[in-house]
Length: 425
Image (cartoon, rainbow, N blue to C red; front, side):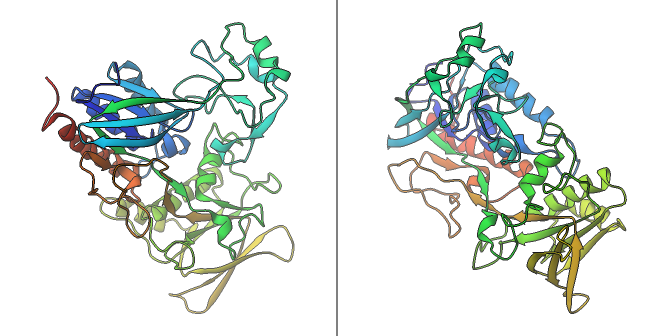
């Protein structure tokens, strides 16, 4: 594909589930697509999950289908380690500047792994939220697309080390690469820039960053994952021991004018899902879920009811006031209001999981007309500039299924802007 046609070419910004869906749907309608992702892989937050709710199935199989559709489509150009710097022009003829960062490893990479043992430098593994490390040259995760190693230029010693170059028999290592820009022309743009977890360290009363056994919900997903930092064993970060009790703190910083005023909608179900992770690994463990309201719309009510019926899971309606270390020094005490029971409850547990909310990822691109955002920073459904659409969690916090539906609609809007009402002949 050329990626330089003015009509019939769509730019999708963001390679998570929404961006992939928009790209695939637009391409299957006959449009060329340029999919731009800042990370060295596509898949976004879904790739970091252990299971979906309510079926509790792993996302890997569904993502692999999407990866295959990206690989086999002749109309989709997937660009990783790149960001959109600017968009100029008008609907049907946008000029887009893409800033590329060097990967350090080219397409000759066979993922043999010979480069990893010889690399002397380690770095925090951002895919696992810093709970383990990788070498400076690494594969983001086992089923990553593209299947290609990448070098973290911020920590790599470069040519002064050169050990990975010497170990690679395929000539795939390219140290010292430079950033570059390119300009493409597209007819429409879909922003599918996704979300970030709210910074739990800002919530001063809940102990994140102070007590190692206070973690976030996104960290729990990686602890439970077989390819995660502990091989799927959910353990206390402080000492590596198993779990006898865990507290989930809902709305951690959310629905709070001091931190994050909106509700992310999906955190309740995510914590109920993660409670099943605990129950499967530790049948005798007690789970305490502190909540303000439980939001389980439609068919998800059955999922909620099943967890509610579990005698080992206690749901306590009340906002958590503080989390402190138990006098023994080995456990944590959660203090909260008990709205239904009356009074204050203090529960001592081995592990605390903070259900932090979703905030929109930053969009650094300049556009012809300023992107319209709501009071929470999410892109509004209707933008001032025709030919620009938003999809998925760039627009509002939603679950994976809703992202897929919404991205399909965004692709349709982009198709209409590109082609004047339908796909190309």
